[in-house]
Length: 277
Ligand code: PAF
Image 1 (cartoon, rainbow, N blue to C red):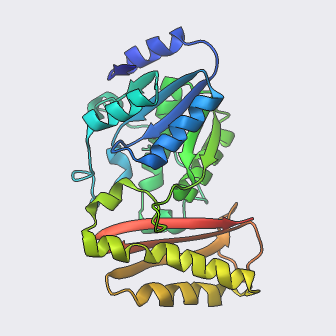
Image 2: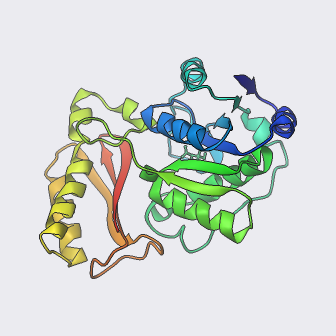
């Protein structure tokens, strides 16, 4: 496994690779969710590149950029085990040198949900992913379904800008009690960790009600919100029942539907979702 920090070195190594390249962009502090992407990439491409870069431009001023968990040594051990070919881990100044002033912005799809709660977040995501795609030139790039809106936005960017990379979404990996794996779960203390399962319970409640025939989106949102609010450590940011393609809120639940939410457990903001097709 080769690790590179300079864009020029990454580009040079890329030129030496032949055949399809699978790419998994990450912010590090890897867990089984990331590894499932690497493993799938491995089955579909002869060469695998993983990036580790905590991207400052996708964090708001009050968010956790400085404290975002980092453990590069552990990440590299995990990636070595998965037989990753190249790990690209640039510094912030390598990616955003002084004078950097070009941004990639997807309109419309970024207005709702995470985009509404975290202004500027997706501009940071699309800019860094566009840069990474340009540097790595992957055939396929793999993202977790947990960040459903991120996948929609990146897919739209890749299509609109004629990028040569296929964007692939893979299922959310969950802990045995249903909590979606996330690097941010590490912020939770034991009581918060127990409380955090409320996100999954709210999603499964909605799924159960839907299977029982409930089609009124507002009633489902209300049931989910009520359940979450019964958990004293939880504060709802949003609960959404939207069309999974446009992300517009629905009145009547007609698939394809994205049920998604952002909930603070203590000080930690968690997101989760499921899709009805
Ligand atoms: O999902 C993430 O970890 C990040 O948003 C990504 C795609 C690596 C861009 O920084």
